[in-house]
Image (cartoon, rainbow, N blue to C red):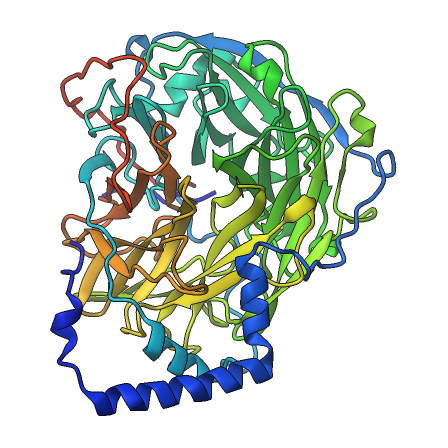
Length: 637
């Protein structure tokens, strides 16, 4: 639950010649320094590890365990539906709901207690500094190919945050925000009026809050590139706390998200515990089990603002939903005892490379949301085995509490929140700060099978110099050959762009078909308005570094006020399925300083030129839709 309503360019490239003239003494000094670093690295075994990582080996496997089929007890749920929606242009307009929420639902509640510990020093800081100085590349991240205005508060709802999300297909870009979605061509031209989720899911009828205009929060969009279909979803409920919580899901029955038709479904979060809200839902496509795979859905469970009940993980019957037929879901609840200090599990999705091998189980990641300032060194991994033929054979995690299948040891990091708040990001012209969401792995987790090397890519927001900041992007690549979690990452980095003092947060990661990686994120400081940037690396760059540096997608021109710091909640970075190399990123910004008047921006970029995309059909551009009338927002009683 994420909303609150109220009444109210890339850096210039430099040639090597610009760096200075040749100096033999500098060269000799650099060689001596390099020799010293080499000796130190050999002493630590760093080179042997780097060489093994580069070759894609997985000789550092963790002790990945998995329960045998038939040893756990999944829930088998029937989905409500399907109902049918045809052309989006023909839907009647049903306005969104006004809602007030004072704070984000989190694993641990603020304010906390106790003294704030100091952040740790990472290992071998002198060696790391020497390596960085010797091998840092001249920043050459490409500029955006285009940026286009996405949806705004004026078109959707006067709420915060927008929960900006989107995905790209052969001919369309679909963006979702609280509490509406829009369809664009790939140049950013709108192809239909903005559609509220209340309008879209009304055909489901009065049996669930999905069909009674109660679509509230956490929209999600997924392009299914294997089937050339679209998936959209949103959480719906009458009230919170309450007793009726559902996820509303639409699956297109054609490649055209405007013309449709769409099959609509609703799944109750937990019929045995109807008072549990499914918060912060995340979805992913997985091609197993045969023959049709599953849509995976994870949610955090809350019964009120302070009571966390666990995580619910679903596998939705993708084959039935693609065919517009009756569908079921397999679900597990992972209780707090199985989660430890973690929540917000993120399932792996894939777009580029070879699909996961037959029989490969879905992989899910999370990190702890622990004591403020604590030094953390683990990423938790779960395997979700799904069997729609014999549901009782499905498993997730280990034992009755579904504890993680594996623990991956990573370099130390500190989560981006203190004992009293996660509103840490400064803005120009105001003392009001923004929420970092620095207590979780951010969506998406990316799976890529490239030339037989299977990897997971993930990232999160962390804090440097606790408790002062700034925040930074902590990203990972994990080798998961054979469906086995590793003991340590292939590579990882806390990216701060050379410790320039700016706050970076709200990231999303994507990997193109060449193995090049990019992360889009928000950036801000006390001397700049929140803006949108991205950074990346080529697959040939040295490990553990976004070696291509940083580029600006869009500069914000205003600060956000009086929204309890609620910003973004998530962003999305995805890959064009046509060429496999064009990144599409969507994120939030403010045009002028104010409250509940956010905008979103959609931008594209690529590392190298590819073939000219050949769409399968030509979309008909429409005039920019005029914002629909909105009800006067009001606070919840």
